[in-house]
Image 1 (tube, rainbow, N blue to C red):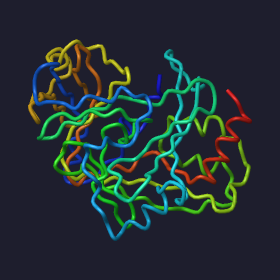
Image 2 (image 1 turned 90 degrees about the vertical axis):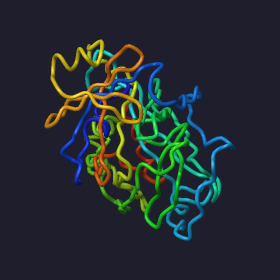
Image 3 (image 1 turned 180 degrees about the vertical axis):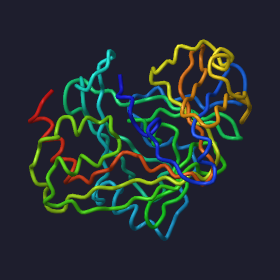
Image 4 (image 1 turned 90 degrees about the horizontal axis):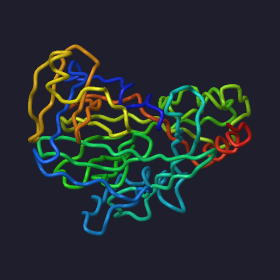
Length: 313
């Protein structure tokens, strides 16, 4: 079981559409628009050769300086698996490296690595826009995965969407902070992923970060209105959208050929998919997702992984 607190349901959101916080989406297995099936590969890799190339950009020097394989400083995020019965003690931890191999790569390559115990990072995630449903198998409750696409590399980040979409979902801005010499527990204490167990395992670790250690704070500006849900096993107990509506109220609407239940003024959300009901989130254009996992460069990530191994489960 992946730890449930994360950017999916612990999101700080701003913008003109931020009043609509959460929704429930009803997805019929045979209804609605066509979908892109998630990859069966447990390690999401770079996009297939049939995917369009990323748009070349003269602003790519920052992006390449972080993500380019062999020359970039490296970009890593951390994750954890928790016991099905709940609790704060992880059963496994790991880190995920995100990188590109060339200037025209249309997607990130993703390389998960187990640190402690048994670690499984991937979650099937769905995105519904006016164009329909797009599925991707993503590590760590993030948006980079088997079906993601880099639309453009920017001077301080990149634009990201899914293959088959006509426009990107997000504009990601990375804010770099030098954390050289800072104690480990201070650095991991501001990681908003929450569920990666870093604070639990390293909360008392005062080891200074090495010279050159950096973190990357992510902020995502929403460019296209959409609904998002994941199939991580967080079943709500409702058997249908109508059953949820009878219990909690709300209005059933449609986006991209798929029904959803909107509950104005509440943080609750439900999604019906393959005869089970899950949580979902609605985003409006201009919303800001700023409660996102913190990234680490190679120097920082190597120390954190080493200290996790010393601490143990």
